[in-house]
Image 1: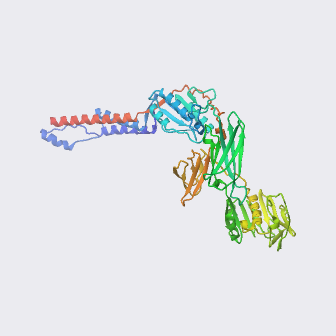
Image 2 (image 1 turned 60 degrees about the vertical axis):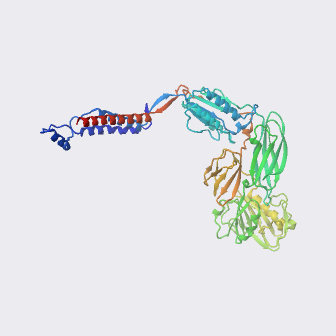
Image 3 (image 1 turned 30 degrees about the vertical axis):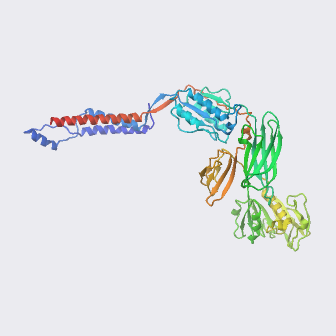
Length: 601
């Protein structure tokens, strides 16, 4: 026997109070009266005194027992009783969606075999049901009967997230070593490495399945001004023979391209689509189809391609207006008087027109017609009109595809050779374009003004401008991918997320969004009605390898098997029933005695 709340035993101090109450009760006194009438009149003037030996009749002992039972109920009295608790662990990860030779999925086979094993157990045994993905957890409070547990198994569904092998191993180790369960039924794709703890009864449904799948699906923008995106996919062949595959890309429901590749057994290859037409949502599909359909599909969104935030500092901020027409660019303008270094905290690059910062910028920067003699860059300039281009580097990222013969530079300044910047384009009076690296950042300086950006209306200058911005922004990086089962922070302003299933979830910006168990496109919505798609993929070729599954290794724990599984059985309800019965008995006896006294009177 034990107590859930031992502090409640302090209420036993009430028992001495009950004894004190009996000490203060009425005591008999001898009175001489002349008649029975006078005796009845004297009953209104009872004489009471405190002290002496109390008269402890049957009501005292009954009330003391009631008080003691109440204190035991408050303390949460329980007794340990032998039990036969079971734990059922069902693998609900993405790999369980693969079909087996019988035509059933691994998950359906696991449920059928676990249900058959439960049907042979003692019907009154308590059962705890666990699932393994995205993190191992118990689905509900322990079920009191086998029937309830079997009904719960029917409601389980596999999800699109993989298992976290380390977390699964830790959970199995814990419930095996705690001694809370007499038996643990595990049904999943992974087999156990010997030695297997005696408590665990493993149901393995992970027969090898030939499969091929898409791993990563990424998009990137390779140059400023280009609306088309570059797509890259990885494909893995996890079968016993070489196969031919085809990948089809569609954007917003319209086919955009196809590519073929041949992969040997166990080989992984890459597929490139260098110029995809603009679309909101892209979908990749791998053929031929196989027995694991989940990894034959992948999604990507154009919005996932990281935009380039630019801070434009100039006494004429209107010169930045044309930059907003470049896909993937966001511009914030500042005048030299209003600019502070804090403005660069969220910027990928900065443009300083007719001015330079007081300190070396912490981001890559373009300096347009900088003033001479500043203490940071120490430029020496010579004004000229017009500027004459005399030469340029042919194999430089700044001069790529630029037709310098068509450039018409009306006025500007020649830049003298800088200590740490070298000339890329030069003229008769000095350098016209310098570039160099300092403090881990890239810098480009021009002796002419390429702004405002005019696009096709001044194509040679626009190409040179895009080259410079692309060099400084480090374009060509792939979009960041999001995976099933991995929570992500809710962006600012987003208060609702629509799942691929169509269900809606209310969200709070800055908090983790954890309902990411489905592969597909999630719609992030804001109060102003804007909707931003976000692609969530399985994107894990290790899950696609259905031929070689890692084994689960549970380290044996000494003494764990010798511990009997006991169940705490609370006695509070029984104690309350006993209290009510005793109080009812006291009331009944007292009522009958009162009636007898009245009748005799």
